Length: 207
Ligand SMILES: [Zn+2]
Ligand SMILES: [Zn+2]
Image (cartoon, rainbow, N blue to C red; front, side):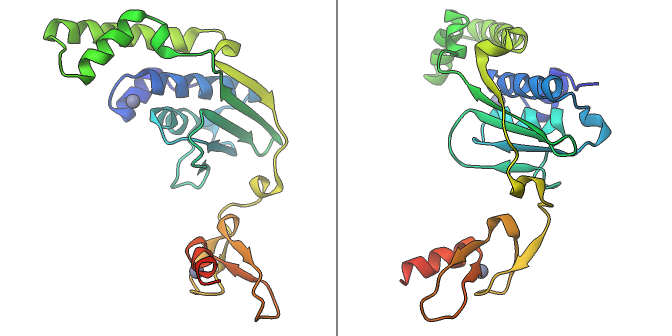
């Protein structure tokens, strides 16, 4: 059973188009990859933004930072790659340029603007609540291809590997997740160094 949008809202704290977009993405992933997140399957999510949408990914797909199956690439893009590791299958969902939640209901954008400028009346506030819910329902039920470009993608070896594996940074000696280790070519040393990101950046500065 897929978690409901109400369950997402309980976790996220408010109803918003962002969490509806994330809910839609998670729902598509469940259908396309034919997975059951409640069965503790090997699902890995790579998200390219840290917006409201990601909370839905966490709740619905049970991908969390704590479990290590949520990877955040800070690219500022509406892109979600969901990987079913045990099935060797992955899909990439990229939000379409043509999709604009503000255009679903013109009143929504108008009231949001008033809310931002603090010129919204209490009556309009109530209206905005109702419209927001409607916009979210619309997003969740709209045809998949109207919101996302959906394609199957190859899984990179790093994403197949056990992402919990850590190695020791050659400079600071601290344990670092292997997929975050950088190779550094040091002219004065005989071998390449494996460095954590802060140490790598420090080396580049001192070059
Ligand atoms: Zn939100
Ligand atoms: Zn280090």
